[in-house]
Amino acid sequence: MSEGYDAIVVGAGIAGLVTALELVEGGKKILILDRDKKENLGGLAKESFGGMFFVDSPVQRKGKIRDNPELAYSDWLQFAEFGEQDHWPRQWAKTYIERSIPDIYEVITKRGIDFFPVVNWVERGLYIPGNSVPRFHLVWGTGYELANVHIRQLQPFIDGGQVTIGFGACVQEVLTSGGYISGVAGEYEAEGKAFEFGADTVILAAGGINGSDDAVRQHWQSDWGAAPPAVILNGSHKYADGTLHAAATAVGGSVTHLDKMWNYAAGVHHPRPRKPRHGLSLVPSKTALWLDAEGKRFGPEPLVSGFDTWDLVRRICQQDHKYSWAVLNRKIALKELAISGAEFNPAVRDKKKIAFLKTILFGNKALLQDMTTNCIDFVTAGSVEQLVEKMNALENPMPVREENIQKAIRDYDAQLDRPRAQRNDDQLRRIQHLRQYRGDKVRTVKEQKILDPEAMPLIAIRQFVISRKSLGGIQTDLQSRVLDEKGEVISGLYAVGEAAGFGGGGMHGKRALEGTFLGGCVLTARYAVKSVLEGE
Image (cartoon, rainbow, N blue to C red):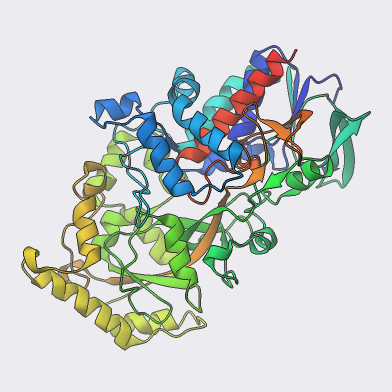
């Protein structure tokens, strides 16, 4: 590869792609170094569901959702629980909320991105208020489309030689000369060949730490318990291992809040794994009974998704055996079973409206068939006795007790035999609340018993904690410039996206309002580019 680059972008996920595209559009010659293969250009974003958090968007207004930055910032602060020293995370949170429309939404829609017309309402909050209104905008085409739009628009610059991409390149070191940033060094892993490239601007965009089991365990959040689960599935990128965090630290960069992570409570093994511990994050069924390792229903307050993902993980990890079960039936699964990501939402990914509407009206039969046939964590049976036998055949550390599941199902179904005014079950109350919003109504069954002869067979799903996103990272100012331990700028070094904790080394604090990850990648990348171009 030739020298003479104006900037080196390390990582070709959505943060790296946005950075490179806007830099080259600004007249810069760019080198992108990515650790993965060419066919995986786009990183984890390309595999994502494609949800993006916006405040007072045109889609919200069309849906008569009243939102404003003051309300969103209040929601964010309550969920984040920032500490007194979290100056830059607060500044990034405020900036994201105030600038999400002009600096993210309007920019990517001009590039050709469109959104599903119904805004999803997630992370509503449980004990602590979360999203007061729906804000999760789904990219029509998922994250696959978001990444590909940027790849397509970058391609002419690649063909013209203004952008060079080096694949299979593990950057291990940020180089300095005379106290200034001078480039990067590392190794082409497949060949074991060392490389070194020079540039006085380096942008780190290589993700977080959640792809490394060792790193996740090392930085496990104490609020979730002293010991992490024995099994933690990987829903992050396999190369998100903190290598670049160490490189930033070596040149004086400050890395903060690595114990803040966005993990999920309902992970299952991928039926066709492409990496170690490869997991899928279920969108947990609202109507399924969430049971502990022995088959007891979580209580006294049942677990129901959609309110506080962080707390679901905490509740799971309070057990001695930190995994769980969901018990439901075929009718519930057809309506409610969903998996986050582009791969298992092909109708949305491929923008096939009729196919998507069929899954809404008739259920996602193909997904259910695939998972019950090929995923080791799904078992089906015609009776509770047979179901428990199959659950225990998976040889878990804690056997499921049939009497626990019988009681959980019996008590829940008995509530549905009562007149509605006499029901006293918090899961049913929350389902009723969820179904008041049209985005949840079409995805949630109405008053469905578990032991319904017309809804069989029964299904049990073994669920593990799955590691997803790093909420902490390399500390940056509002120009995405890396800061040292004294808060001083390291000139020429930038961090964007998840590498920067999506801004400032942790702009989400303890919890995320969801959809802020892709948006944070775009925002931090664009602010880095603006700083580079204005610094000429």
